[in-house]
Image 1 (spheres, helix red, strand yellow):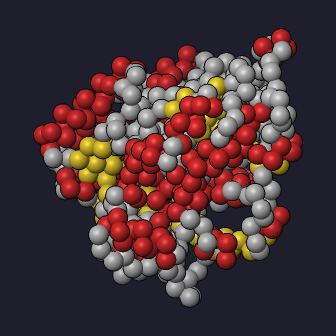
Image 2 (tube, helix red, strand yellow):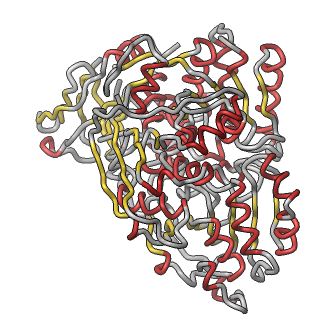
Amino acid sequence: MNIIEKILARHSKYPTVKPGDIIDVLIDARAARDFGGANVVQNIEQNGLNVNDPSKTFFTFDCNPTGSDQKYAINQHICRKFARRTGVKVFDIDKGIGTHTLIDLGLAYPGATAVSTDSHANILGAVCAFGQGMGDQDIAVAWAKGSVWFKVPDSAKIILNGKRPDGISAKDIVLNLLNIFGANKLLGYSIEMYGHEVDRLTLDERITIASMATEMGAIIILFPPNQEILDYCSAATGRQIETITADDDAYYQEVHQIDMTKFVQMVSLPGKPHGTVDIVQTKKIKIDSAFIGSCTNGRMEDMRIVADILKNKKVAPGVVLKIVPATNEIWEQCLNEGLIKIYKDAGALVSNAGCAGCAAGQVGQNGQGEVTISTGNRNFPGKQGKGDVYLASPAVVAASAVAGYITTRNEIPEIPAEFSAKDYELKEKIAQKNQTQNTDKPTSLEGRVWYIKEDNIDTDMIFHNRYLAITKLEEMGQYAFDNLAGYEDFSKKAQKGDIIVVQKNFGSGSSRQQAVDCFLALGIAAILAESYGAIYERNAINAALPIMSYKSLEKIDLQDGDKIRVDFKSGLVTNLKNNLTAQANPFYDVQLEIYQNGGIF
């Protein structure tokens, strides 16, 4: 077996597992964040469930640790009260990002399993642990049962050959990988990383790369642990941790040999984390603000790089720099090493530890027309605000903040760029998409189609993070697709029984259950896609929202507004306009059982 198969087998009742097997997986650490936690509590209480093992169960308040939003504050209080009654541990607003806490406190280690309402829980692959982001129903089941069902994924091996070029950071490595694989070429895969330079990566660098597995569409990126990782995890857990490796005869669906010597410093263009380009294409683009932090680049090594660049320098006139360490321990270390003073002397805003702008949290949001360069892992439209967000390494972001435009640390000008009148002109963005209308609903159904010919529709486009505090299903429908260009009025035009047909990687991004529930609230009958984000697929199945995947619908000549019949058991899709049929993937047994049960509960 390969690594993912070994971890899952060891946490199941089976001695061996293979891709496609659906198994119950025992979960070592079960976490919920501040925005998803209240929904987990609601699911537990409404279904009369108890917490299986409070010692393995945690709340992590990292999305909005300042409580600056009234709805977040209410949700946090709901979680605290539940924790007092049940003995669940709360890593409260003073702790930092939950996934980092799991690593640093030895709750995640090589070979362990963990789930969280954080879609970047696969960051735990940095220490060769299985981590998964899941929706609030899944997490509630994990809390009550101690295990959840999971489909063993296909695996890919990526081998980085050659020497890492000078100046190439861990963030540059993952942006180069996104440039090669995009958002869906390895969709649903577990990836193992190998190579001489990979073996030398520090924990902080591994965290950076692992944290963007979600943006690649992968289940997880697993790094076989080197001695540094084993020593770190052994110290964190208080016991000797053994390594975990793939067998010599392990099978991988894909193996990719990549020449690392050709990697360059890269930047993700606004709107798509996988829309990466050589930084030379973005140099001199004027910025309004810069953000350093998130689960991707808020570690101590990142903080030191930033301080080294900012020392004895000032942030460019009119530019705002916001810095958010990942954990409180890192914040305190920055204080003890004098880095906080360097940041403040340079003119930066330093906030307490947490996720910050990525989760519409304490700091980091930008406004309409604002241009931001960020170390975050996502720059979907609206994710970090209304403006444009470029993604880059901490060194590039810090250098750009000093320069006033996107640049590298070796090309910081003596005199920073200043704003002129033309910099304040807002650019008008014209969206173009098709729209439609529709009809009916259930193991076979007919309905009229909304055909949205677009890949990588993420959960922020489906149900934006500004609505995350909403817990009542009947209130969610009005916000469906209101952040998808061309479909902002979808909820007003959609009718009960409509069928949504989309393309690749539908529902990528966050773990939010609301991105499923908003369609249930509208009475959407089914969703057909070429492929789904892994978390979204689980959430839809668990909520009994009928979803099916297909390879091609070309032969049925499907158009907007056509009425189709979908059979969940056979997988047959029929265009009732011309009676042409196409074969989609039928429900698998677990999906059909959950659907007929009305949901996982």
